[in-house]
Structure formats: C-alpha cells, structure tokens
Image 1 (cartoon, rainbow, N blue to C red):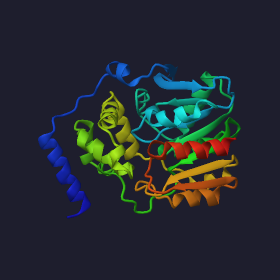
Image 2 (cartoon, rainbow, N blue to C red):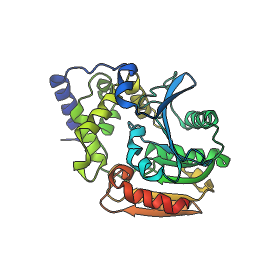
Image 3 (cartoon, rainbow, N blue to C red):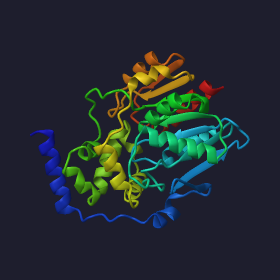
Image 4 (cartoon, rainbow, N blue to C red):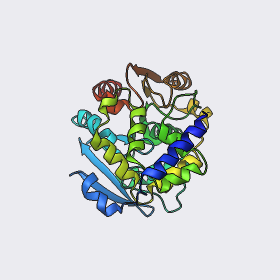
Length: 306
C-alpha cells in the first residue's frame, strides 16, 4: 500500500471517529498557557506573547526562536539552566502559540526578518545571541545573514535549510503536505495525531507527556493557527542555502543524532559552509535536543558564549 493510500485511510478513520475540533479563542487559552512572567507586545497588529527573564542588565541577551507548531514553552528547561548568567528572551512566533497568525496569513523569511527587527526594537535590543530550533533555526541563520549587525553569535539546533535526505519524518507533517487531505486538518485535529507527531520528534518517547500533548493540541486549535500552519506547508519557505556561506558570526551547531525530521548529517553541511563554526552531535537524541537533553545543550551553549 502506498504512503498516500495509507494517509488517505488514516484521514478517513479520523473523519469517521473524531468529531470536528473547533477553534479555541485566544482569551480562553491565555490563563492556561501564560506564565507569571509572560508579557504581550503589539507588533503589526499581532499581540505577541513573550517572556523576558534572567540577568536583565545583560545588554546582549539570548533570543530563542522555536520551530513549527511549537511555542516558547519548548525552551522552559533550557531557560532555567541559563538564566542565572544571561538575559533570556523567548516568544511565540507569528502563526503559532498564543501569538497566532499575521493579518495576511503569509509567512516567509522577509516577514520574519521584519518581525524580529520590530520585536528587538521594541525591547531596545541592539545586539543578541540568536538561538533557533528547526524552522526557528532557519529563521535565525537567515536573519544573521540579512542583519549581521544585530547578531553577536548564532546557535543552530537541528536547523532547517538544506534539502531533506529521505528522512522518516513526522506523520502529522506528512499529512499536512498532501493536497485536499490537508484541508481536513482545518477541522479535524485528533489529539492522537499530535501525540504521534511529537513521538516522531523524540528519540526517548517516554518524554512525551500527556500535558505536553494537550498543550500542543490546544495551541494548534488557537483561532487562526491551523490555517497559518497549513499555509506554511502549502507554501513552504525555501531558503537560498548559498547564503549560509555569508554567515560571519561565530556559530554553534547542535544536533540530535536520532533526528528523523532533519538528518544530523546536515550539521556538517552547516559546519563546512560557516567559517567560524563548531558542531556538537548528541547521541540518542531526536529533533528537539533542548527538551530531550537540556543539560547537555546548556553546557554546550555556556561554553560557546563564554
């Protein structure tokens, strides 16, 4: 049976056995998924959810950028390990989390470059250490190329950029790329599919908890987020990988060797392209090392930014 037929069968089952999932108003989610130090800031009509913590006097803070369908919560443990010596800033990217979609529901590197510019300006940050995972890694290195004066150092964690190498991938992401079928995901978003997609991102499946799955599911249902996510899959951001050679900032490249979404071999493509770079590959770790091996990631970043 072909993959497409298998996915069609899965979708039919979801339609038969799962009631349609309604969007959730952001005001219903804010009490559940904000923290005591959460803030919101208006940027281009979006109410952007962010957290600022740690050494507030630090003038070159670490700025975290999460990946597809994730949120600022993915950095919880890593932030707690780094905040004693650094100022830490993290936010929900437009299209995800509590921030939600932009007005045009269009997403590309130019949009995210402008968004990060506006965000840093409003927080009066002239230079930062930029850290990105997956899609966030792709956004981070592109920003470092386009705005070199704003980025002091760069950390790429299982970053997007280079073409895929027949990786196994994630079930949810695969379905989202199939025309017609993916339209059902605007209405049917079974929590079992969220769990399976998260398990595909982890090597140690036991780390995928019920509360984590519920958070990803709830934030996907945040009004506008499903349309935004499908827009990103229908019109994927296609980077110009030749630009990677223009990166001048010292760069730390971190990767989980068991990443089945983006092969760890890409770490060495980044290493070969970026002049001042170093690689650390973590054994028995998947696509989200900051959640699966936060202590190792914190140690690597601390050593790098000394």
